[in-house]
Image (cartoon, rainbow, N blue to C red):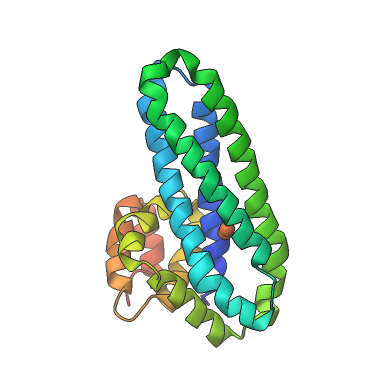
Length: 216
Ligand SMILES: [Fe+2]
Ligand SMILES: [Fe+2]
């Protein structure tokens, strides 16, 4: 199968959406007993979104700006607003253990942030997905996506890759693997595969093996 380099952005959004839905569920049923799970879900999602936004700001938008000047300004601004929202939510989270009786405030703030972030994902998709196939040649796309993966390789490999891949469903996993196979930085593909193997069912291993998606 052919590699679709920019599927990395769309599929990362899908994984983030799955994380947002899980957090929303926990937020709607928040109780003192579920606080540890709630905090972990938020922290992991925040960590994923922070790397994704940094990859966009530093490795994705700059080459896109060269092709389409000023197209991405609005998204970088949304990232800055996002960063401020994270700081507020994080400080509220830290204060939670002493203020367990006051969960309604954070529930409201979290609910608002979840819906704002969904809007950001849709906004990027509606503007960028149309432009990308026209703005970049295939070879250029591979180079841009390699730059995205290389931006903070350690964080990508240690945490982000497993978090995202674990939230993708069967057909999405196949496309993501194809993207990794085509765009991984030199020599990194086997390391990436070893990070995601634990997420694969025996059926997936069999089917991906047959399509030669797990080997270099
Ligand atoms: Fe973004
Ligand atoms: Fe994004």
